[in-house]
Length: 425
Image 1 (cartoon, one colour):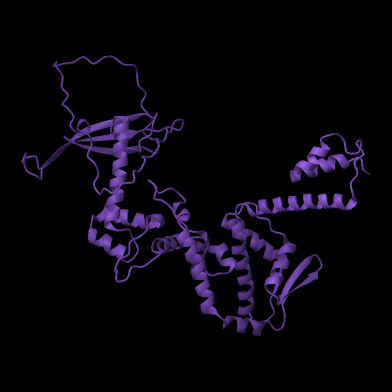
Image 2 (cartoon, rainbow, N blue to C red):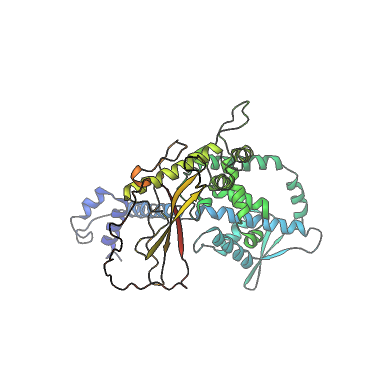
């Protein structure tokens, strides 16, 4: 019975990192050395090792991704049970199958983003009975049925009249603290999922509860729609730490600048160029200010100009590498009769076309690096980029060199990209 004692003691000593015990066991096998151990002391070592192992397992379970989403789904399940009973009060009693509740709970966790949620029916039953004392569980064959007691109607009526304002204030305070602690930075592009990253999950779920209902079936049916995401982003954008007395417009923090407010300001500026319209939207908390629009536009323009200078050529960032590209040039003349008037324009238009194939779709270039600057004007390109010397032939009839045959791409292929670049002469 004691042949495995040496191995068990060494395992406990390594787990506990007990230097004194490891030093004694390093001399050799515990049974061969005839080491004596009091039973109480041996049990104490085993208990310490077991407690240490349980603590590690508990820490690992707490670090499991998505653990914070379990209370959200569980609270929605409780609300679904109580609302169903309240809706049918005075009629037939409501009976729930534990298997059906576990299925709803698991589906809601998967919708919230939990991979392979751990849902145990027995633990779920115990949690429901502890949170709602009026529930009772009854066994019927292999099914577990959960029903309310006879006096549940009066208990729900009293609970609905008590402390609603306090509950609302506590919920608002909890969500506001998370909104102030959640900070994001504006990126150089609106990537997929940027809206969800700019707001805390509790705020988005709260907006979904207001729009679609708080029961679990409503969330499974509707999920998160664009209006939920837009409203949540506007709430995050208009959340202030402190208010200035007597100020009509409050300055927004860049750490809580959401993509939706930025997008509204940029799209209105691109379509209208009207400062009054953008500022009016900003006053109502829907868009960023006009000055902020100019600042972001200048930052994007400066990043693109810097990329032009680094690469040594004016090449739009949307063009891909290692793909067959053609171009066409033409003059742009506006009011050509007046060569010195301020309304005249003489330039050259260069249209570039990329021809992807099924085998080669090109290599996407890295986006420009946005420079954090307060400038509101895009810097000018170097003179060598804007003033192009004229090209001409010395001979009347030049003889072009012979080249190998070039195979043109199939014009029926999709995704023909075209980019127009204007350069002033």
